[in-house]
Length: 236
Length: 315
Image (tube, rainbow over all chains, first blue to last red; front, side, top):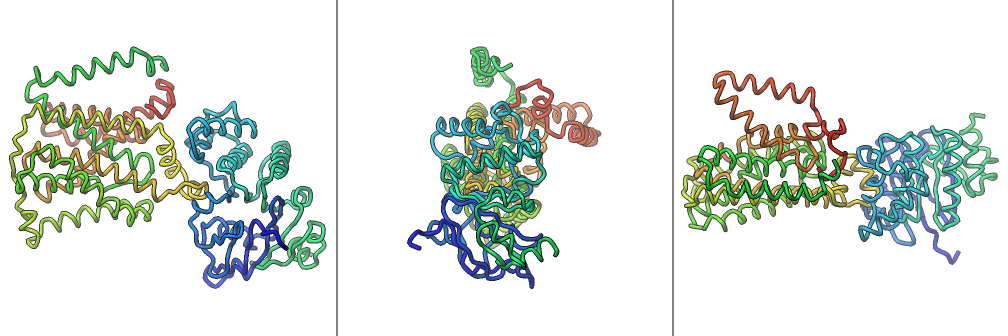
């Protein structure tokens, strides 16, 4: 345990009125891992993403990124430290071109930003559409663009909210292959997904949430065997 | 079309237009000069409004506040403190620019219609404040401030021509820059922009203060030209609404839309007023409704959509 985890969630509580969206939730994410975050609707998965990225503040508990406390920091500060996210409902900038969608988040010299943006558009195979408005893309393509935006500011930890939902299998495979390639390049991923096969095939670890509590954690197969999880998730 | 924008012909055209505009005081009548001064002042108002509201999507219904505050500061400096007009104008504009950093810091957390209303409240509140008898020793209260700045119509025209030119160049530079893209990102999805590492509050405040400064500068010139300011005149809602309508007319979020809108609007207004003095407000209203119904993106927005102009941010 000498190595610092990339992300540490420490006893985090978040209540909306009387309902605890997250109830004393704790876990660590290791550098270079792909972790699946599973649980039924309303389990607190998206709330957790919102707390990590600073969109929401926890009522109590702490979030650490690379050993540094990021609880209470502004979303842009957390992003600049290297945390990127995509949304379940795509939130790219519709009336901006693909190229502009990337340039706008780039840091540094104009030319370098431009080169990096083109490089990423090639990576997600959208370079031919660079001057189209993002609103003209298909849903799946918008997800790819959204991922490229996160890569544009060199996020080390990438949170993906249902990346595979609602897109065709070909694009889905392409997206998952891209995630693996980026993972080999050193990026760490946390993926929220309802499709268990995506989690089983692509994640090394899984964390299961229910009613805001962590009910299981470990390798994918272990989590899948967990009785409580099966009960909640598959209604057995 | 692209050649026309970047080519030598464009620069030649701009040079000829500029030479013509600069030489106008040597041959034009006072009537035309007056009309042009108003067009140029409104070009700055509309461009200044568009620079903040057109790009960020935060509807500012307090443009008159920028104009009135700067107008008051500069007018009082000229009337009571015997400042030379050329020094009084930038002091008024800087004053409103700096105060609006504080105002922006507080009000730019409020979104949508609530922000719009809060700016109206700020304008009305300031008008009341300046008109109170308590402040009469400083502001002259409700009586207003008549003054003579001793500036010729030609000098005033050249000043405002220079300001309008600088304003349009600033708008051009910003709209096609990364800063401009960040402002547009705020308009498109502020929360997403924030989680992508954009310091949205800072960007909004910078744009807001810059808008205040440019609009304030035009406001100072406007009231020097009128030789008079009072609370209801300096903070009238017309000073907010007219530039907004002009911008909608020319194209929100475009570079040249506000200038084109201000020019066409002023001419149409003038012609209708001269020809149909009694009915002109009714007809003017009908034209506005038709424009908003059929050209919601404004003239430039419509031309970009139809492919008459290229769909780039530099226009």
